Image (cartoon, rainbow, N blue to C red; front, side, top):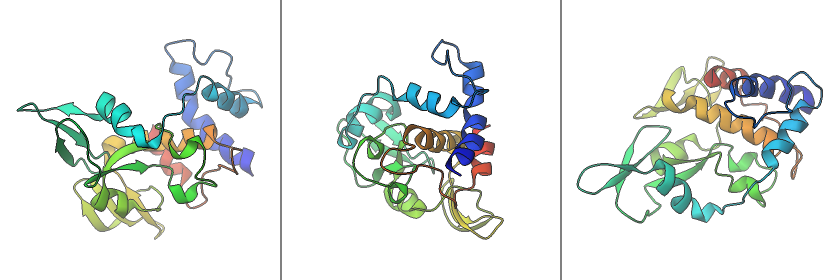
Length: 207
């Protein structure tokens, strides 16, 4: 079951990356051979540098997420809602937080690199986005029960509670989940996508 689930999800997600890659990073990786998933997993595990969850502000925020604005100030944007948080210099957590796209409760273990992996950590508004998403799967909210800017909580077409981030972030969120499924499959447990996370939605968002 694990192989089948990962094959359908991951091949669809990564085939575009491999075919369109501008470098030789994916040389030797083929979607046409049975060892594709393990080959891809081994590749993305190479040259991996662990960065602590506590260093997120100095690494991701300051180098990638922080944007300049007027009067010498900067802002960080909530990826789920589009909320802009103004700050200067050091970053204080409270209004904003580091969202685990692959929810902490989905992890078989909180030890190791998966908790801190910055490929699935994004800045979000704590109370109105992160806490509202909680441990719910991502999806298209047809009936909205709560909305903060562009982020929505509600039920999908099947009546299941889902969180829908803004359109701008949907592709990144989908690829973050696929990455985590491949990168940590077999590490501390089985890393298939949870049964309640709609794989087809993620494929659509990725495209």
